[in-house]
Amino acid sequence: MRFRGAGTAVLVECDSPAHAVAVGAAARGVPGVVDVVPAGATVLIEPDGAG
Figure 1 (cartoon, rainbow, N blue to C red):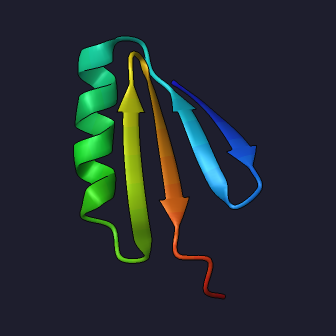
Figure 2: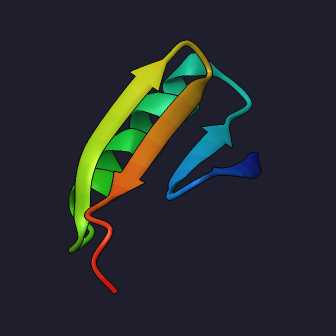
C-alpha cells in the first residue's frame, strides 16, 4: 500500500481492489473524513479541511 498526498486529499494505492474496498470502509469511520472514493485498487480520502 502506498500513500500520496494531493493537496488536502490522500490517494491510497492498494495491492488489490478488495483491499481498496476494505481501506475505504475503514476510512469512512474516521472522524473528519468527508469523502471516500474507491476506484479499482486506489482510494481517494478527503478530510474536512478543518485545522
